[in-house]
Image (tube, rainbow, N blue to C red; front, side, top):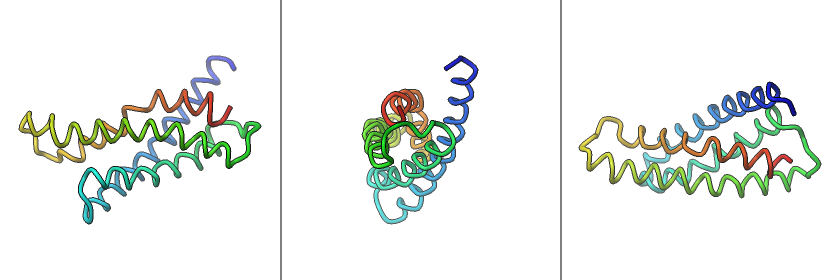
Length: 133
């Protein structure tokens, strides 16, 4: 694959990921009405992940040789590591670092947005070489 094709694919991945991140982010806000921030981050992740899988399969990566079930399995595996990153960063920022810095203005929202953004590059490589190979 040439460099411009790879760049185009990465841009589509970012766009799809942005939409999935919005699903994750806003569903977390909804879950936060009923659950603690820490639990809401975990509950929101599968909604964003499923959105990302459907859109990535359709608009970012070729169909590949694997079945949809196998692709979703590997996609979930890659996202398990991303979910751990999102949770650790989001909760670490919201409940420790930002509190220590005495920052309270939309503290959970800021922490969650940063947490969602961090695994972009590792997820792209994992999905490219594992989920949709």
